[in-house]
Length: 289
Ligand SMILES: C[C@](O)(CO)[C@H](O)COP(=O)(O)OP(=O)(O)OC[C@H]1O[C@@H](n2ccc(N)nc2=O)[C@H](O)[C@@H]1O
Ligand SMILES: Nc1ncnc2c1ncn2[C@@H]1O[C@H](COP(=O)(O)OP(=O)(O)OP(=O)(O)O)[C@@H](O)[C@H]1O
Image (cartoon, rainbow, N blue to C red; front, side, top):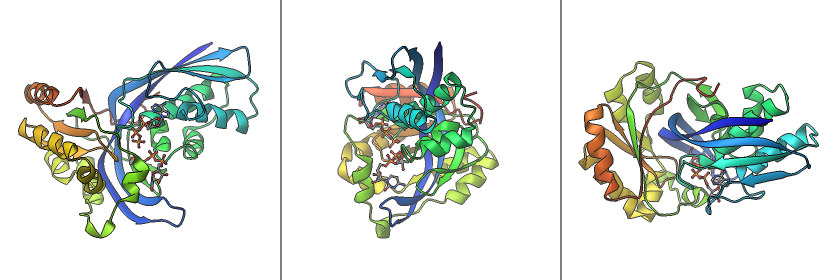
């Protein structure tokens, strides 16, 4: 038996950090939405009781460090499954990019194994298990558009944003999410208006959404890596309607309403960055059904 799951990337339209918690994590308030850039996760049964990861990507671990491996392990242990699986991951999402690639592979593995092993778990139950793997996994279990709070694992679904194009550019710098949070100085940031963003999304107000994009983690990553600020400037110069870094970076995304403008932004950025993508937002719920 063979199960296929799509594992789409996310971007953060708004990302605020409220305070550091006693457990070391930060309390966040952010709007996440799924985009049409996805890894492919294929799960096949094995005759021996083992978890194998096959990815053919030198940046992706093929052992217990892989978040898809951790997803399979949690389900096997929790439900006492004595069967093995091979998990084939075909990466399209750039690695360590701020696009939740690994988290989405883990979420796809949870959904896929739930089907393969007929566990009958709800998405809410899978999201709760996913939160043990990483803060972004719960959102990735559902996809769509959501307000994420807590350390990112408390998910409230909201309306999809109005249709537009998203140009993504990933500079070749490596960013550690833990380092970015560690270096965040909350006394020196402009907090984005997350409530205003929810309102603008609910009302389908594209221009207002553009004006409200904000991410407090930019204050750290842009200082560490000036090339990220440079990519932001170039994206604006080529005509994106609004530009922001996703998650802890380093990927920068630009929103573009009209296709006529899209080509100029996309082609312009290709002169600066190897990894550039032009995709759609997939903000609807149930896109993963
Ligand atoms: C930046 C975002 O991607 C925005 O969506 C997320 O907040 C990060 O999510 P993630 O990569 O799934 O993060 P995790 O794997 O859970 O945590 C990695 C590290 O980031 C820091 N971390 C993460 C999430 C959070 N709310 N507070 C934190 O301080 C912690 O040091 C943690 O050890
Ligand atoms: N399935 C996976 N795909 C990619 N990287 C993985 C995977 N599993 C584990 N990793 C490890 O996780 C690290 C971060 O990769 P990932 O692509 O998930 O980052 P990210 O997009 O910045 O995540 P987030 O936006 O959730 O912070 C990689 O450097 C890699 O070593």
